[in-house]
Image (cartoon, rainbow, N blue to C red; front, top):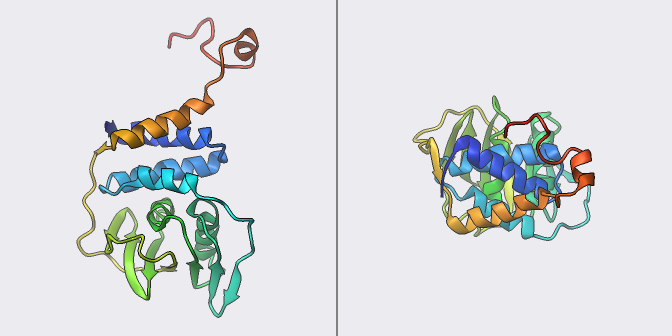
Length: 204
């Protein structure tokens, strides 16, 4: 499915809302997934995978030297919290154990424009963000479930090319559309009175 940036962003936002996520998280996901897809990385597929992963009861991160460690991490929840703590300079690095999607985590971090990040697996850099640029060093991103994120200020060599239109996998498009349809409500007098559908003077 061929989509523009805004079309994919709206689809991901609606699918996230249809998954009962907070509006702010939906906004972050819509930009993060579209950022990945525009670099020819399967952000939509990673979002669907993450939505299906079980969320464990939230546990406060543990401090280990200059790092904060999150256990049983999901990118949508602990991942966003970890990045917030990192950019607020509450720690020098964050470590996410058993992260469900390191790729989705990179996409979410791309929303923090003006900050630069490096992502480490087994002490090696697997990805890096510098403003709107992305280096992706490791295609085997599922080989390790632990990832460490640090701030850095290095410019990137050979960042991934950015596309203006995204070729979304047809099955991914169908699944995202199905999730987005959860936002629809049955047509009734009550639903119209509470704001659903077009008004009498609407032209759409």
